[in-house]
Image (cartoon, rainbow, N blue to C red; front, side):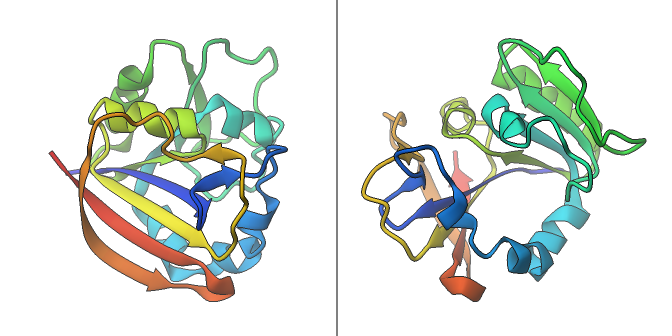
Length: 183
C-alpha cells in the first residue's frame, strides 16, 4: 500500500525560505543531497509527486533532468500558459485546480503501489496536513537560523500527533527526521 510522504527542508528556527524568498542557504548541500542514499531510496519508491505551484514556478517550468521521473500533479489556481520542459514518457505534468484532496487522489491512482511524495511550498504542506492526507512527514533541518522568512507550519492551528521513526545525520550538517502522522 502506498504512503503519502511530505518532505521539507527548514532552518533551525522553522523557516523554509529567507525574508526575500531565497532557499539557497537551505540547499547549499544540494549536490551531496542528490547522491544521498535517502534521496535515492525516495526516488526508487516514488510513483507520483504532488507539487505546489510556487515550487513549479521556482524551476521556471524546466524539469529537464529532474530527479523524480514520475507523473507530477501541480496544485494551482491557474495552469501555466506554456507546457513544462523535460516531459517524457515517465515525467508528465497535470495541473490540478480542484484542491489538494483531488491532487492527492490523482497522484495515488498514478502511483499504484508506490509512494506519493509531496514537494515544496508551505501552503501545499499545510493543506495536506490539515486535510489529514499525510502518512509520513520528513523534515530536514539545516544548521542555520534565518531569523525571518516563510515559516513551514505557520498556519497549522490544530495539534497533529507525530511518532518519530527515523533520524539521519547527513553531510553539510543536515539532519533528517522522519515522523509517522498519528490519526
